[in-house]
Image (cartoon, rainbow, N blue to C red):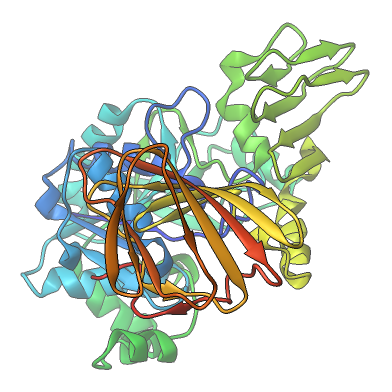
Amino acid sequence: MKMIIMAGGSGARLWPLSRTHYPKQFLKLSGMEKSIFQMTIERCLLMGSLDDLYLVTSKDYLHLVQGQVEELGMHLPIEQILLEPKAKNTLPAILYAVQAIREKGDDICAVFASDHVIDHPQILADTILGAVKLASKGFVCFGITPTGPETGFGYIKPGKPVVGGFKVEVFKEKPDLKTAEEYVENGYLWNSGMFMFDSKQFYDAVEKYNPEVYDAFQMTSVEEKFNKTPSISVDYGLIEKMETVYGAPMIMEWNDLGNFTTFYDRYHTKQDECGNIYFNEEIMLDSKRNLVYSEGDKAVALIGVSDVVVVDQKDALLICNRDESKKVKDVVDILKQRKDTRADNHLTVYKPWGAYTILEEESFYKVKRLTVLPGKRLSYQMHYHRSEHWIVASGTATVVINDVEQLVRSGESIYIKSGEKHRLINSGSLLLEVIEVQNGQYLGEDDIVRYEDDFIR
């Protein structure tokens, strides 16, 4: 069996916790030793080996994927990391992976989202492995027993029982609250977004039910395929058109963290006596059913409020009614229209070589902390409008200025004038931490001439 993990996303629904360039699957939330993505990888390894695993992700997330896999002590061959040149929804993404799998031979495939939180991974693994025979007969989706009416999920109506599951009678899209209540009362299941199928049957079904997508993927290059294909979900573009679809129940706790309402549900065990959920030493006076997620050591107090979400980050603050949390995406859209970088990035930005954190910023100077991983290096670059002063806080830096290399040790510093070509390298085996002070007339990221990319594939 081959496993396909969908690791795209836009980071909009859990803003400001997640951002465009750091979507929710890469987060390590409170109480998590590993990211949601890393836990997805580990669940898959209960069902097969790393050789059976294929990741479909954005080219912008490649360094995040590779870094988090390496953090688990693993290496995933680049051939099994499939980079989408642009997001075109789930049907093209899955077909992309199926084509890669079929190059080595047809097999049963299971598809997983990288941003689902599952507390009992062995139950999931046992359910998936138990549905392999059913998947050899046709497309299989997995249904979750609802814990209540939820408007953020699609629903499945079970039909005639079959060995290992049931025939799906009908799929229903995300309903309003009244309809969701009716679905729950009538035994409908949540559509988990996890699927299984035979790769050849899937490929043939796309050709039959969605020839436009199929034809696009007959193009030679990945760029041509994604330029030509329509953007369409696997639900609309395939599953709902198929004559027979099977379902299998998955009896376990499951959460897709789709918004702050489901986020609240995920942490229900942390509720205090008034239904408040918080993670530090927040003060709640006459307040009920609130969710507070605060970063750092800031003192936070709520007085006389109920059903509110408060997410406090160093560079962004969200306050909304829990029932309105689905509108967070609209906030991100407005920020993007304003070209506000806080829609896309945290103060800490992850790069192929490590990360940088903006410590302080004004119109004429910016202070960053650079963390360079062992053996990594920044691109060889030059700035027209700013100078930089590097102070090594820990480790030993190899610095190249105008092709001249020198060592800068912990506690030492070096100055780079505007117009000088320069590069920072960590040649050692320990983390290198550097405080960078930029000074000049313009500090934008577009004031960089790169002589090579940060990441050499």
